[in-house]
Amino acid sequence: MLALVAASSARAQPPSWRRLGAGVDYAAVAIAPKPAIGEGVLHVVRIDPALARIQPRIAKQLGGEARTAGAWCDNPRVAAVINAGMYNEDMVTHTGYLRVGERVHNRHWAKKYQSIFLLGPRRKGLPAATIRDAGPDGKAADHADYDTVIQNLRLIRDPGVNVWSASGRRWAEAAIALDRDGHILFLFSRSPFTMRDFNALLLRLPLGIVRAMHVEGGPEASLSVRGPGVALDLAGSFETGFYDSDGNAAQWPLPNVLAVEVSSR
Image (cartoon, rainbow, N blue to C red):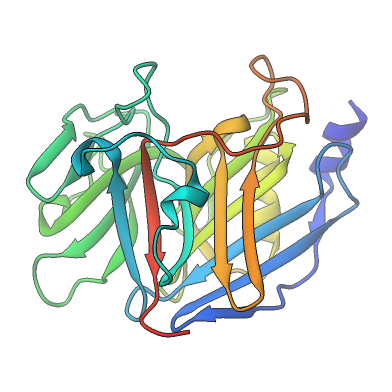
């Protein structure tokens, strides 16, 4: 109960950005008061998709096995890797709609998810990467105009509205957000929150978040960060009813991730 009270009143200091490469910055934001579980830090990678390349890496499409986020950092240009989303018990299949190029890995649109990550525009005038709120059918209206389409559970809808109700369940969190300037944000907190409290924390920060999606919780939640003087392989742990402990020390293998590559450091 004390941890939940602390989370509901949590606040954080403004980010101090550190350059990882062209178009990519990183900040570690201390959460105050510090939550009872975990390190009490929100890790943020801010990406300008016009300058840095965000790539889907799907183990099945690449003909390999699931790897940790750290292992997916497989070349010197990689600045960050995060979960692409939740996966089914087969340890392969993304839980929402997923298409990369012409290959559809899951053709089922989960209407309750309501958040779509779009990458690689097929016509001029569209952002290189963005997040859309879904329409009534669960789809993004312009999803056919993008090479990569990833559907996930919505956390925050435009224009910065927390869509989660109060709940006693909490978990370590990996999320992806869109800010008002069109940046993509990779977000990670090992300290567990209810999603209503996590969203409220994000919206109180000067990050300008207008939309956000959940990409994983608990011990599967991962973020790896690489740059000058930075080499982090972050792993989640606590998840109510699944992993009720802060004892997980290592990243779990992931079948589907998003990797950010920079053109220069």
